[in-house]
Length: 95
Image (cartoon, rainbow, N blue to C red; front, top):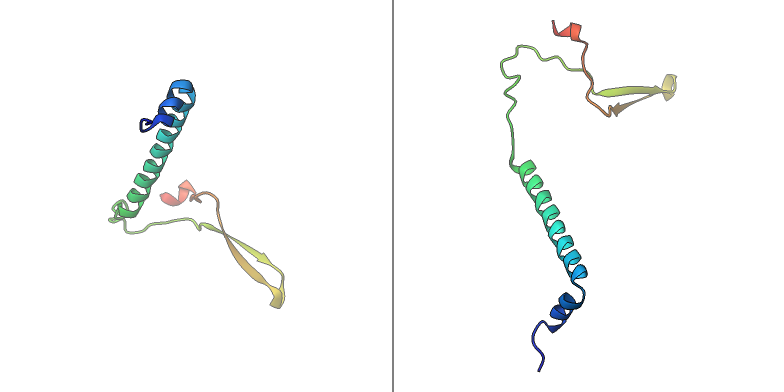
């Protein structure tokens, strides 16, 4: 009669490096899945109210889109393309 887990014991005895590599890979994948789950949960549950600008009488912001006009006359089309980074206002407008 064979003992339970005989194959696992044999693999551990004859190839310890493969066992250690498999164990480390499984632990790292579990760590990554857990971290992604924590980030997802944080994103779903965290809601921060806009307190920073709550007391400001006026908030000035730059347009976050580039307007591209193609054609002319009746064939004229305007397309709004989002900017890859946040557009900033000139410092002189803040005064």
